View (tube, chains in turn cyan, brown, green, orange):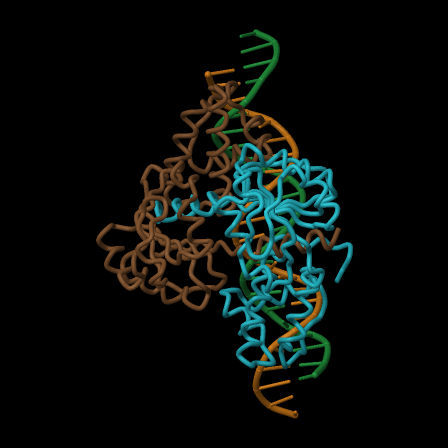
Length: 209
Length: 209
DNA sequence: TAGATTGTTAATCGATTAACAATC
DNA sequence: TAGATTGTTAATCGATTAACAATC
């Protein structure tokens, strides 16, 4: 990996697709894959794929291709999936409980270690073997259990105060499903997963063309 | 709107954010907003915002700003939100039922008109006032109820066959939550909402820097 | 009128595509 | 060796940023 060169977000967002596809290829019992084959499965040109990988090092063998397992492990390390980050979901409504139950996260090495809500009827229930705790203990528990990632699934109106609490408690990143722009101190990374953006974009494309 | 000029996806994906923020500003009782204020709330430069809008026409008044309600209506029309698209969710697992319950879609004018699953225990139940029907009736019901958008929330292994059925039945667009790349005939637009991409990207950023 | 703010053109920046030398 | 395929440099394309004239 080249430390000082900045890598485009477009490249980073394609790495999980490569990773996922390499896993599928591995499950098919294939050991070696070319940039043409791997890119082809994703609708990505082989040049694009090779350029993306080149940002981090040399992973292939000229005239041969890429060793599936080795490339998968390398991309996993680049993405930091070998860190097994601890996550908490805040806001156990419909979306929050769906996220708490999402099995794909486990497959990527993430660990769900806490759930939070404010509703006394929800507190104390168990989802996916994790107990829902009172949101007023959020800060304490984030510190105690060394939680790295906070998943915000509360209504938009409460998202900023949750983010503030997470930030104070030393969270590293926030995955935000509330449809609102939040502000946090420098050094905390936010990914906004605003579902209405995708759906509205779809509406645009079927309206035109 | 300029018919022949192609508009960047980056611009289109920002329009829903403008729309959402204009609604919030309207709710605050504010009638006129500048590109500086509107962009500022979203962390977008005023130049970027004006450039985005310029792709579709002239919506502001020099020296004054934008009339909040008028701009909101115009962006809504550009996004096609005034069409009130009919939607169906296929796959009523945790994520599917969360999507079926998601209230923000109603606020954007989308209509949930059908739910589908294969599991006999799920078929016949009701979510958000809509009955879950047998997935084998998917094609017929899509045609009968004039469903425009299919939301795929089935396991990756079944996503392609659902997409094939939707395509045959005249769907206009697919909003895909299955972590897999699907192929559909030209003219059908797909938005992939691959949750593992966002989370892996977050992992990357907290691992580095 | 003076001040403010848009819409648009020009300049810069960044990402993708194409070409090809290196080499397995 | 010949064929295949990577890694990298150069060329193109597209998006963002800066500047400013138009005008409310």
